[in-house]
Amino acid sequence: MLQLKQMNGGVVDRFPKKPCKVCGVEGHFPYQCFKNPREALKRTPIKKIGKNTKQWFITRATWLRNNPPTIDRQYWECYLQIHEWCPIKVSVETITLDHVISRSKAPGLRFSSDNLRPACRYCNDMKGSKSLESVRPDLSL
Image (cartoon, rainbow, N blue to C red):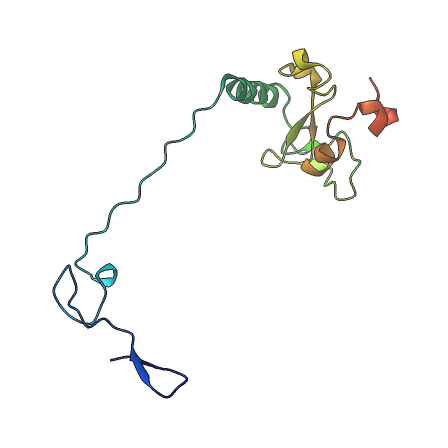
């Protein structure tokens, strides 16, 4: 039996003296008993997506279908290239679609594929909701 020594020199027994409530055997707690039935993990239901999220998935899929990769038929080119870590080549797993005119300034262009351009995560985060002219004047519309 495993025992634990105390500072004062006495010995304290870590195991209970009473028998287990599940199987009736001494030496373990009920939560340690192999006969104790385990409850299955309760799964939380998947969150329902709203109509804007659904519309964005449709818009993104349509944009990707209508604008195939230009570099080696695998990669898009990040059109901003303003961040020092910009990989320039962006794959389908890492692409983010940037709104040229931000959603906050023109909510009507939120799902317009003419307002979307391929960008890497770093450049898209750095641009945020700023205008294209303030970030890269040479790319202005």
